[in-house]
Length: 256
Ligand code: COA
Image (cartoon, rainbow, N blue to C red; front, side):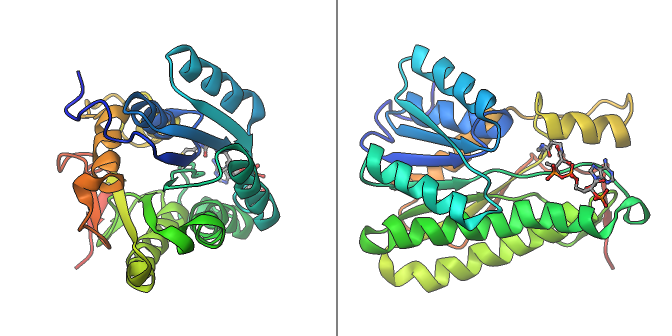
């Protein structure tokens, strides 16, 4: 049973990038269960179409649209799709990300650039396009999915940690720049989330058989809904870590 009222997100149109799997799917599901009209976007057509069908079977209003967030033309096409389908966008969740465990010496220049391009530039692209198409006219909420890496050296994550640091900065700057327009911008930093591809690979590579404490996509969705809804109507520029202070302890090394 949800901790929120069933109509928390009613009348809201919500876009979730990377909404076909893992945390993004969990957020899409939770938003839809609380009354939102949900649009999920990702590069993988068959994945998001299957997820959208699954959510519709649960009674959720859900549409899918193929989009590569690295490509601004593809992102503006996504905004056109939302305009044609719903005519509005109230909440953007920048969740899409790419990652793999690799030490700095294992990373090529292209590998580093690829992850920064997906995570950081992709977050900028979708935020900017949503701002131009919808948010600047009537306000709204943006929630970026980052990582609890700030202030730490994170083993095997030079690419993702750099990108997430950029997302943290972008979150705070957009919050300030867009505050006069009624647009709130926040971030959620999940720790180890069970049953996601990213956690699976990182755990296998770095933790081996050691037990770890994981939360679920629904735990992340609860924090996202707080920030996206009127519950968080006076919260902006914040980064909320949702990892029970345990999520990536095994991966991070304090920077002195
Ligand atoms: N270790 C080191 N380098 C790696 C790597 C790994 N495990 N996986 C990919 N790379 C490198 C590639 O070799 C390539 O560099 P190169 O051209 O110098 O050889 C570069 O990263 C780009 O990889 P490529 O697969 O061509 O890019 P892509 O745009 O098709 O996909 C990802 C990029 C990140 C999406 C892809 O690595 C991927 O599918 N990851 C797993 C899925 C995922 O990220 N899920 C989200 C979890 S948060």
